[in-house]
Image (cartoon, rainbow, N blue to C red; front, top):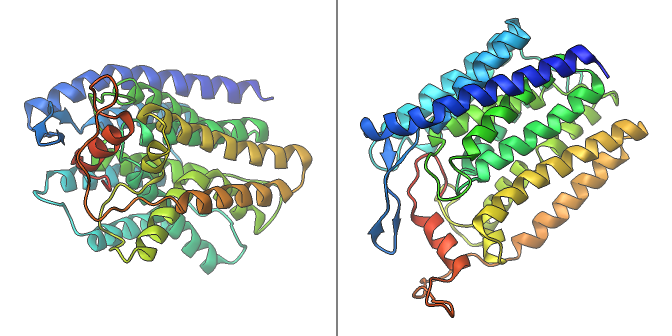
Length: 368
C-alpha cells in the first residue's frame, strides 16, 4: 500500500471536511439573507425557509483539496471546470421562478459541458474504439450527473449516496494505487460528511440544483478514472457496478412511470427513497441505505480485484437488477391521496409523513 497515496487521500479528506464545515453555516446564513431559499409546506402549513446554497459550500471544500493535493493537469482542469460550470448553471436554474428551466434545455447544456470536458482531456478507454469511447464518456457524465440530481429528493439521500460512492471509489483507488482517483474520492467524502451534518434529518441546508449537479458530475468523472485490470469491456461493467444505486433509482423511476402511463419528466414520490419509506424505513434510514448500497456495490469491484476475475461484477449487477425489479413492483401511485393518518400517540404516521413531506418540499433541482 502506497504511503504517499494514503497521506494525500487523508490530507484531501481532512481539508475538504474542514473547509466545508466552516462554509456550511455561512451558506445557510447567506441563503436566508439574499432570499436563496425554499419554503417547504406540509399539509398546507409553511415550514421554515431553507437555504439551497449547501452545494456551494460543498464545492468550496472539494475544489481546493483537489487542486492542492492533485495539482492541475488536463484531466483535473477539465473535471473541475465542468463541475463548476454546472454549479453556476444549477444556481441560475434555482433562481428561475416556477418549475425552472425546461428539462430538454438542461440536457443540452449538460451534454455540451460533458463534450467540452471530454475534448479537454477526460478520455478514458472504455471500449478501445475512440468514437464509442467518446459517446460513452459523454453519456456516463450526463446520466450520472442527472441521477444524483434526481436523488436529491429527500433529506440526506443525495449526500449519503455521494459519500457512499466516494468511499467505494476511494477503497478501489487505494487498492489499485490510483493517486488522482484517491484524491478526488477523499475530497468528495470529506465535503459530503460536512454537508450531511446539516442535511441528514430536519435539513437546515439543501444542495440545490447547482450542488447536486456539481456533486453528480465530480462523482461521475471520478468513476471514469477507474482503471480495472480486466480489459474492455469489463472496465465499463465495473463503472456500472460502482454507479449501481443511481442507475437503479433512475431506471426504476423511468420504468414505473412508463408502465403507469405517467410523463417521465413529471416529478413524483416514486424514487427508491420514497419506496423504502413506504416499506417502513425512516427518512434517515432510507438515506443511509443508499450510502450503504453504494459501498456494497464497490465491494463487488474489490472482490473482482482480489480474485482477479470479472465474474463478481456480473453477479453484483444481477443482484442490484433483481432488487430493482422487486421494488419496482411496489405501487406508488394513487388516484387521490387519503387524509393523513394519526398513530396511536396522536401523531402523524411516520412513513406517510415522510412521503407527504418529500412530495411537497418544493426543493428546486429535485424530482419531487
